Image 1 (cartoon, rainbow, N blue to C red):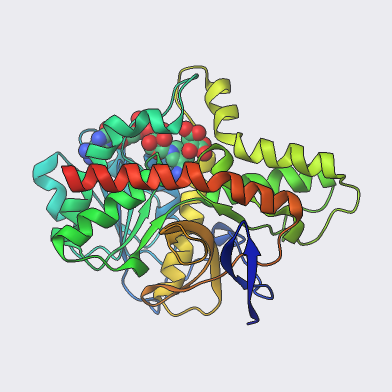
Image 2: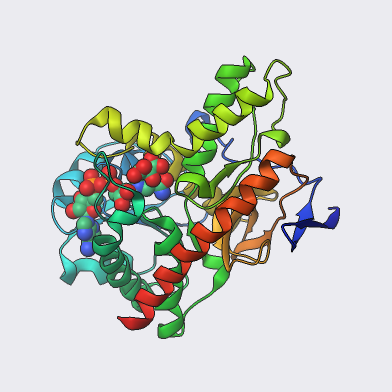
Length: 355
Ligand SMILES: NC(=O)C1=CN([C@@H]2O[C@H](COP(=O)(O)OP(=O)(O)OC[C@H]3O[C@@H](n4cnc5c(N)ncnc54)[C@H](O)[C@@H]3O)[C@@H](O)[C@H]2O)C=CC1
Ligand SMILES: O=C([O-])CC(=O)C(=O)O
């Protein structure tokens, strides 16, 4: 790996330019099932499993041959979801848990906990408008994770991710269980969108196409690095790249508006969440060179959390990779996103420290 330092807006950024990124290219659903028993036992818990994301995500995780136990938790509705999903003829044993008194059982022994619990946006709202409700939900769920499965990898989907991840980190620090290698903000949907939009516009095959998306998960904090796209679509102009960047940044809003009050992305998010969880499981199982973009504790910029390419391993984050060479447009985007992302991180930390 080549490491260098890039000066951008007066900041030193660590760069790993030659690192290849699988960035959610793992189509585990297309893989034939291994029921030989050679894969280790792995328990995945989904918190918010009866929701718009939770239900399709439960199906996709049930289809993953790396999962031996699937624990579905919500405040209500999980017995029905669990009974339904449990009829799918794959390896994972399914159990449903409802209500706070069953949360401990749902979490005990979990290797990976996925959190899509909380309220989604309606048209006209920002992700930050969800803070007041979702911050408390995330805080209470993370308090239980610290108690019942402190070693689990936590995949945070609940918005605003730019704040809920710092909240989780503070809760774990207070409980004495924080391990920065095990906490992830799920930004895979940004990568999924960037791939789809670029490949469509540039007329390159979407299968096998890669592009990193860095920063955070809200508006301009989402920064696709199309200059690092592979393969490159030569037909795309600078204006096309600007338009694709904006569309990726506003992909969530595009869905919120299309759903017209009935919530935000659920199906594409379930897919993205399943891809990211699969990468975490592969890392835990020792599969080499698993690299995904995700929002983690980071030294890549001056901010304490930042999304970039991350190599996953047996203990979660093995290595946070740098940004690589940026175009002038991307350097500007990076500079612009820092104040907003900083404020969202600080808001999360402040909330967790005060409550
Ligand atoms: N990271 C990302 O890229 C994305 C994040 N999201 C976020 O995911 C979250 C969930 O979205 P949807 O599934 O569409 O919402 P939803 O309202 O359909 O489902 C949320 C579920 O969480 C449950 N819940 C609420 N409080 C809970 C608690 N204390 N414990 C356990 N479960 C609880 C609800 O009962 C409900 O079943 C939202 O915050 C949304 O903004 C959505 C799309 C993409
Ligand atoms: O836009 C939202 O509120 C949900 C979300 O995070 C996304 O779809 O990227």
